[in-house]
Length: 117
Image 1 (cartoon, rainbow, N blue to C red):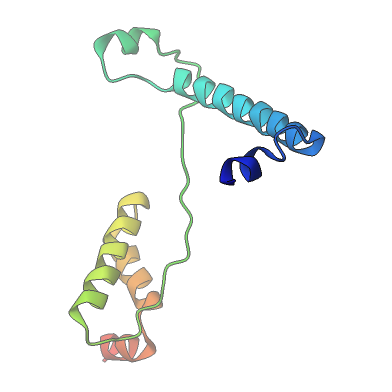
Image 2: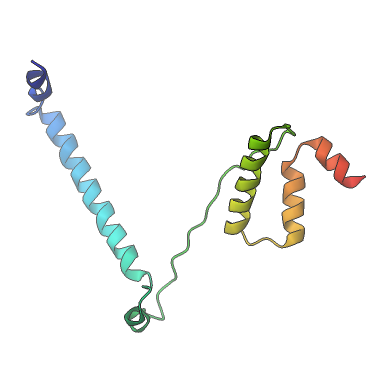
């Protein structure tokens, strides 16, 4: 009975159209991905000779909303927030001064007040 329900819409024209469109989109994405991989330098010695000097290097920009620390007295919450900071700072190459300013902006106002006094 369950097999009959599963196969009931198998030949429906809209379903066929959507499956074909999804397959074309998947194929286009895979082609784009293959082109990107070809432009990336490889880790072995043979790759350094095949890397074209005029190709643009592959760059990824990471943007995400960083949460404000609300001053919870909970070791797990603090550790999670500090781990987020470390990850954020590993992606963005800020100076030490910029790191401190960023932390102050993302900390609760009472922490900012404590820092200034």
